[in-house]
Amino acid sequence: MAGSPASSLSTRPVDVADRPVSVRRANLGDDSDIDRYLYLLDAYARDPMGAGIPLPADVIGRLRRDMPSHPTAHALLAFAGDEVIGFVTGFLGYSTFRAMPLLNIHDIAVLPAWRGRGIARRLLRETEALGRSLGCCRITLEVRDDNPRVRSVYDQAGFVPAACNLFMEKAL
Image (cartoon, rainbow, N blue to C red; front, side, top):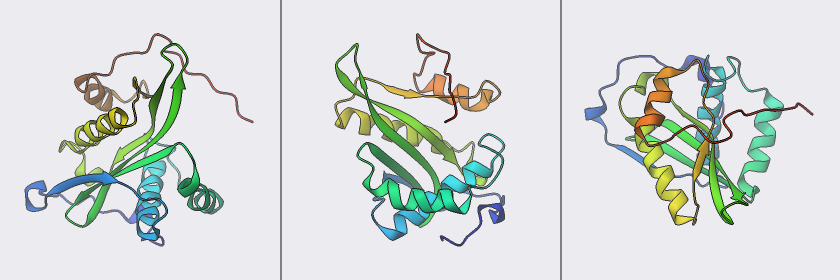
């Protein structure tokens, strides 16, 4: 899987009823799971709603090295049978106003052939369960203004605009 370019992903119609869908925590220290995770992350990076370009090889190498030992990293993988079809990357943070941990969804994506089949909703439910199991007071995420389809999914899952709804960044 590590050598599988995400650009070769099939957009064939998929009958979700043919294969049971499951979601589980990824073991990023396991070679198979980190390969699956990086495959999906690269597919997301290539997507227009990601960066629109593949992840550079040096970034993939650093992710492979760093993610298994990152102290706040959590990942979920979605499968249809044995095929990996979606993922979540989450990082624990801390709410100083609540004095409790929070879980930030840094990435969530489903392969194009599987979109519109409830996979993202399933990933969000499992992320919520993960957050509860970690004692989190909330789950946060960022969403692009130009992605109304996924914004609707988040709305239906109970997400609301944060009180501080302007996210800013400065490159270093």
